[in-house]
Amino acid sequence: MRSLISALEERLDTPTAKGLAQAVSRAIRDGELGAGDQLPPIRRLAEELMISPTTVSSAWQLLARSGTIRSDGRRGTTVAPTGRGGGERYSRALRHDSEVTIDLSTGVPDPALLPGLAAVLARLPGRSTPTSYLDDPVLAQLRDVLAWDWPYAAEDVVVVDGAMDALDLISRTLLRPGDTVLVESPGFPPMLDLLEDRGVEMVGVPLTETGLDLEAVESALARRPAAVFLQPRGQNPTGVSLTPTRARRLAALLKDHDVIVVEDDSSGPISSSAPISLGAWIPEQVLHIRSYSKSHGPDLRLAAVSGPDSLLSPVRHARALGQGWSSRLLQHVLAALLEDPEAVREVARARAEYARRRELVVGRLRELGIDVPGTDGLNIWVPVRDESAAVLRLASQGIAVTPGSPFAVESRPGSEGHVRVTTGLVREGHAELADRIADAARAGAWTAQQR
Image (cartoon, rainbow, N blue to C red; front, side, top):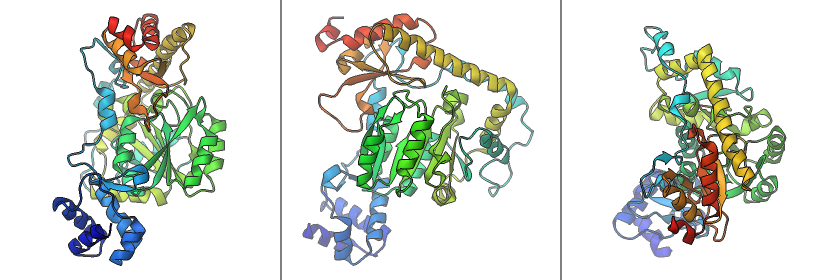
């Protein structure tokens, strides 16, 4: 470790976060550091280089953003493999090994259930975009519409390019490498990939039928987490929604802790559950994200983020240094859709139809002795005897589903297998599909290969 510190000291031109990050990069380039090598603890390196621990931590954050280093559990912070690409869980979740005729692996909305744009676009004013870079990044009309059914009286709101853009900005500005973060288990693969790339240590918290397991949260708080990431309704993949009672108790648990709560309401208006947020009890700790991609169109790429100024200011600053704002033209379109009576009715019909499709499949599975958790969202989380066999069995019948392993926070040998099925895309044949899922759920590796 001493020789490594000396190597960094030799390459340190300026005692700043950027200077230290460059020194680490040079050490990797020169072969002094390789993939998997452990970096010195922050405090020790700070003492040896006679710089502040904050400077070292900031350097680690810069390196984590670029994918140069990562948190490696008990091993601490290590050099990431060269050429390492992000999105490992996400790519596994979408991987198909054979041709399929019914793709229920995507988690996307049914295009036929999105509201029409033609009438709204025709009514937009001739000059619906500003002529200056200096106009307010959030359209006033959209801000007012969002406030109408927001789950609590938020201090302010920022509009970004979808929920993942919001999660990227929040994790980039408010988390540091080595931070402990509580996440739902199972969780959303792209978010897990993102947090892993940030170099944080993820602690999975199991879900009950009403939200995060409170005993597990209370136990994990002893690790002094920097943040809790959760999906308040229609959790992907389980469909679990937070109840008001569970939300209130969770808020009471977190109230006296220095922890940020990041809520990703990714299903938004198509959720059959009512809007809910811990912001109703602890608004100074909450960042609430609502996406409109699944309800109003993936290509709108819009989401809103609410929170106190102390948490939103770093997010705004990061946006100002990069993209600056989300298209105000698209903001006009979303605002018009949220106010247009026919578009509102179309979204309401979609919400009811998604709930109907889900219940038809879940109800039949229940008759066949397979209980599925949750009550909301586009997907169902089906327990299976053998995950690989179930996926293979369905694929042999032309049906693609997502294996459960990419949703795992950490690999646990012997844990129960699952598959995720996007019931929101099933327009007909619900009972027949459920029968096939049930057969696959009971399949073992040998029986799957016989079909």
